[in-house]
Image (cartoon, rainbow, N blue to C red; front, side, top):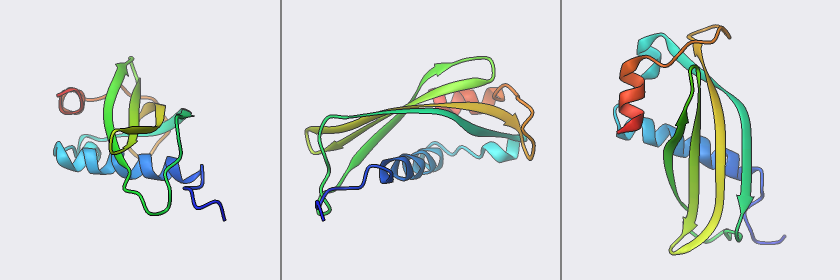
Length: 112
């Protein structure tokens, strides 16, 4: 055992961070008939988090497109950078894979 966080877990951590962010800004995207799907994820590590460390992740929209948007994640243990991730999501009509621009309320909440 290497005693570091397994690389695939960082995607799950970012998913959890996104959910916490949505809750913090009062975002209920599904109430607007809108959902989103992951299209692309790029991660780069600066160091490793160990099994005993607390990883803080900041989340923000880095780019808005017509139906897609990029979310950046910055993972740190204290002042030490651990990873950055950029995920491209595509907005879709709830319950389908038909693309849809984000409703103005969603865009406003996530841009604040």
